[in-house]
Length: 111
Length: 115
Image (cartoon, helix red, strand yellow):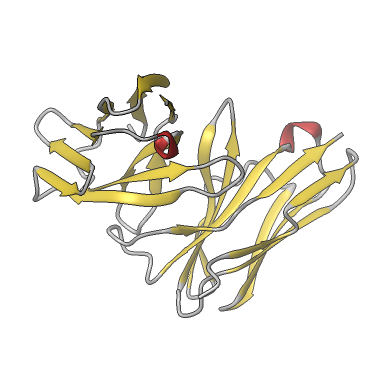
């Protein structure tokens, strides 16, 4: 159906380590997969997105991979910093731009 | 650009009262989305407007909720009468044309507490 499953729900890492968050979906019609970062007291902000014709996309310390056959996509953050601490949401896009969000991952980066 | 503007930022009201949340989308954006965020249900789409017309309101919980977009720069989400279970953070987001691959820009949200 429409749901997006996101794991883990919480992730704690040491500064400088990598963090990986994974999402799975079941609707094969989805072609757009954005990731949002939400800091405390703020609205979600897009950090990276990927389209179904691409397997991987990178932007500095952030990368996203997509496996359309297996219907899963992942966010990779390398060299984590304390300011990366936030809630991260994956989402999938549908025909008119509706986004269905995962449940979120609380990432804590310890100095 | 100021981004998506929402008001009020915080609202505390008593059960049974009417609540009106307001949103100003980014200038030039033709699509507007209202979301609700709770711990239990996460981020849920309530209603989507394109060119001021409601396109999909299947996420609106019940008849107590209504949304309007009288012009391209203003939208309201109204709850009447409010109930404690409506307590949540309500976000407004806008995008250029509402296509699948467009970025949605979120406002800061309105934190609603119904006592």
